[in-house]
Length: 122
Image 1 (cartoon, rainbow, N blue to C red):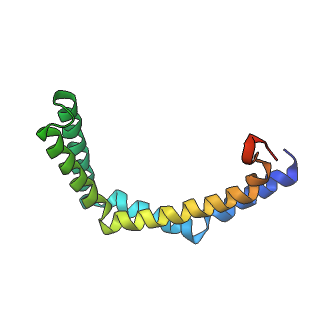
Image 2: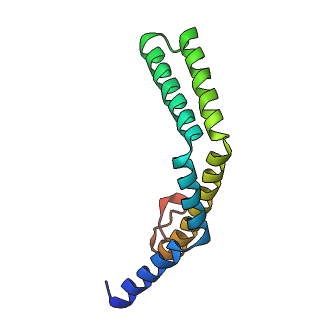
Image 3: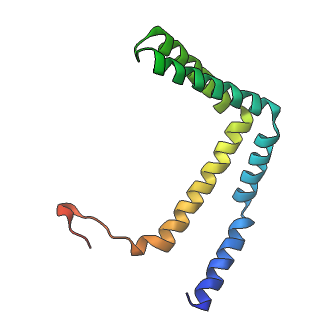
């Protein structure tokens, strides 16, 4: 890679590190990791998943045991996902995904093959 390209990539990386969206994501992640409530809800989801997997492996997919375990898993996951800290993290992560998609489109889209009708490439 030539020097100009390396310098440009390094500058982009530095800009991304101080992007307000990146800082919001870091704050949201730190809040998640330090929350005892989030840890408790996460354990609840893991336990519900374990019970669901157990039910699936020992009973038929349409069994009442599986349906009950599936519902418990859904409710545990919903409770975790709807927690304000989890929602803040999800929103911050969504902003980063959008930013990264824009960067990807600018930098790499011109080099991708495009498929058009009939399977031919431009």
